[in-house]
Image (tube, rainbow, N blue to C red; front, top):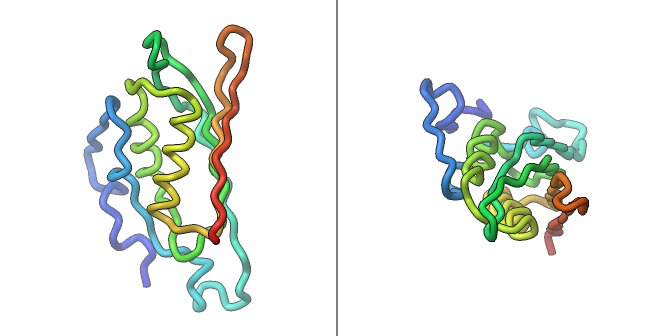
Length: 143
């Protein structure tokens, strides 16, 4: 089985970027190699750590830009997030006004809906505003 055969964004030629509205429809997934017995005969438990250092959104009150590193850690069940689609998805927040906590929570929920992972954590390491850094974290654990 080719893990990448159903991906739309990766290698599709010209990329269309949207910056004004977060869109979970941009996210794509592929079968987790950890869930494929032929690719993982020892049954290793895999985790992924992703750092996206160029996340931006707007303050919903002032319209000023907020900058953050988004850190995603998860244990996939059957699916993994495709990195280009994740980049496009995170880029869709750029001109959208939303509080830090709401953005991090939205990202977590959108990834959980897409991937149905064993567990997933999203942390937003926002640069300080008024001398106060905000680093909200959203965590999901499969019940």
